[in-house]
Length: 237
Length: 62
Image 1 (tube, chains in turn green, red):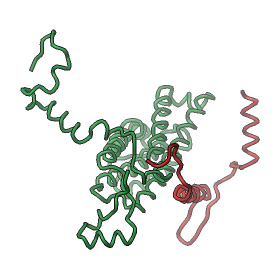
Image 2 (tube, helix red, strand yellow):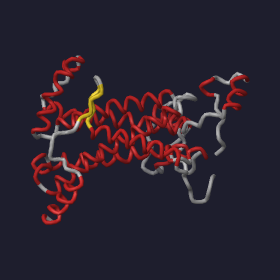
Image 3 (tube, rainbow over the protein chains, first blue to last red):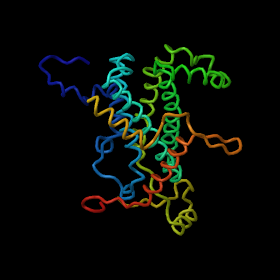
Image 4 (spheres, rainbow over the protein chains, first blue to last red):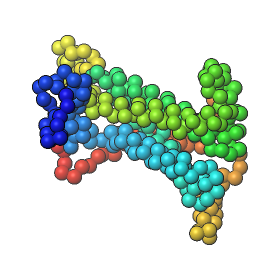
């Protein structure tokens, strides 16, 4: 449908005659699944009041620093990050934010593993997190190969046989620095970004996994026929 | 600025001397660098502390 110049822009939203359009259907589906209050909630359930629940957002924060410092490194290039004082500093920020990213992600992973965080239709959340972790390892590895120094040359020659033995060498040549740089600054960050974004949306969609019920409560729920993977007492928010 | 960086290098260098090949621990077929082992131990410590330390919020539970 077209609207004339006199029609206010917001008048085009939710007109009954537009309900069949793809944009309207997508908008309705998105808002229904994730209304703004659910997408950015002001409050969390009471059980989230534990430090172990902080490591997810710490991981995302570290990733933000990784991306920002990576953008700066990409702008100025290796002559800058290897020689100038500020370049060395930003280079170090990129390295240490990556270290913290993995540190926080592993603690987050352990916490979610022992919570069995895939319970309650949260399998996709768990799997997207696992994939984000694995692809992040590849992204970090290609980062070590992209340093443009003797260290990256040494790592590539040490890694090539191992990578080739997995069969990945058919498409991933770790001694091809141009290819590894492209993977590091385009391909893998894109995949990690999509996976992390999807992971966060799934957390908002399904909510944060509640803790296990006390053993006596769990026994009652199982006896009542509640599926074992959802037999948890939700702590009231 | 350069003086400061020289001072910092000496201060940090006196704490941890990194000017040598890495140290490795061998246990059967398992080989791990001391640096990686330290990081793993730190992660375990942080994990345990994150569970044990109470999380206080202004305004109490809600």
